[in-house]
Length: 247
Image 1: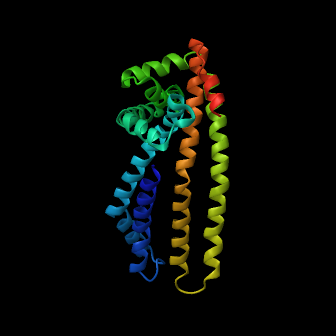
Image 2: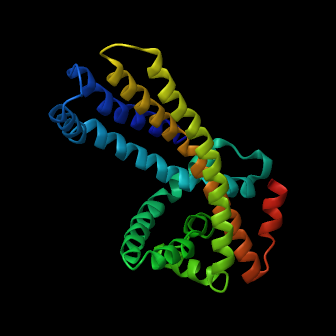
Image 3: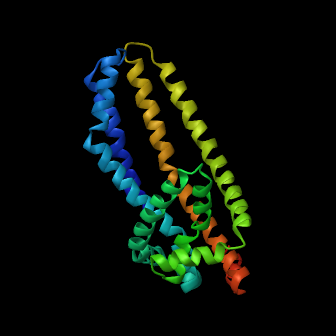
């Protein structure tokens, strides 16, 4: 569902980087390199592509909990249409709270990063709360604080381990693509070696970006499980058991 956004956005951003390369025979001089960077930064394709990718990212962080909610509502009979409906239903709230939390994290990070980390962990389950409890923005933030209270360190450990595993998988794939970006240019000899290297490097970087949907969904599923676990501890529900049965 979000893949078209990443495909179109990545294509536009790749175009903004690659197209200026063909307007110059070499990037060897500092003047041409500076001109290339300015051209890329002023390219409408770069900014439009980035905006499209951001919209796709918001869809992804909503999609993870939406998959679980669709299953809980319809069990094995849920379809991608059900997931899409839930995702678009809560996307506006996710958009608003992502901006608020982003600003809050940036401001709190000015104080030696520790407050920023605290805020990130505290509100890490905001998206699952929006999807499963349909609260407003302030209600969601209060609910996050309530569930995380007295469980901050255990939540931190869980999120840290989840991020380490996902990051390791992402790094392995990224290393393979980076290796390709160094090997392929060695097969070509001539004046175009710089352009070939940059094209391959940019292309591999964009392919790495295409892995983002899978990584984001896995992370959000992890946050969803954390939400179920915290709610079980606080309110003695049976949500954790339902997630285990779904798995």
